[in-house]
Length: 145
Image 1 (tube, rainbow, N blue to C red):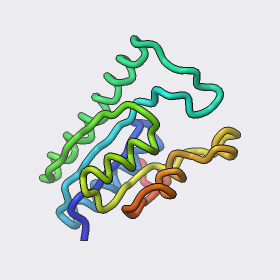
Image 2: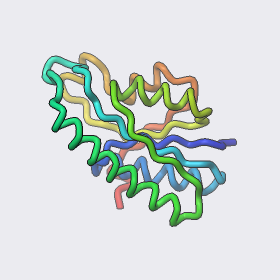
Image 3: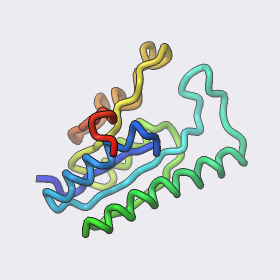
Image 4: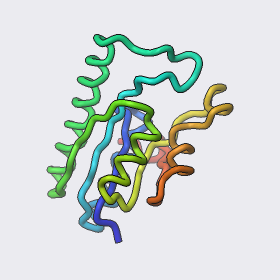
C-alpha cells in the first residue's frame, strides 16, 4: 500500500499528533519514513519580511533538532527513515520533495486558521491542492502524547 511515508513537521506541539500518527501508519505497513522540516525564507504573507543569515542558521539548527528527534523515534520502532531540511516555501517544498522521492502518503499537522490563513490558505490546504500523493491532515490535540 505505502512504501514511502512523508511526515512534514514544524516541531510544534500541534505537529506531534501528525508525527505519532505517521509513525503508526509506517509501522503498520512497513514503509520508509521521510521526515521533512522546511525553513521558510520567502515572505508568504505581508507580516513576514524575510530573515537574516543568523536567523536562518538558527531556524536550520532547530529544524535539524526536530528532524533528528523524529528519526530517533523511527529507529526505535525498527523502521528505516531519512530526515531532510529544506529551505523555501513550505507547501511547495513538501510537494516537490514528495514528487522527487516517490512518496505514497503525506502527513501534516492541522494548523490554526488565523486572519492571514483565512485569506491565503494554510500550508496544509496548499499541499492538498498541489500534491499528487494522498495527504492526511492530523489534528494534534487528539493524538498529543
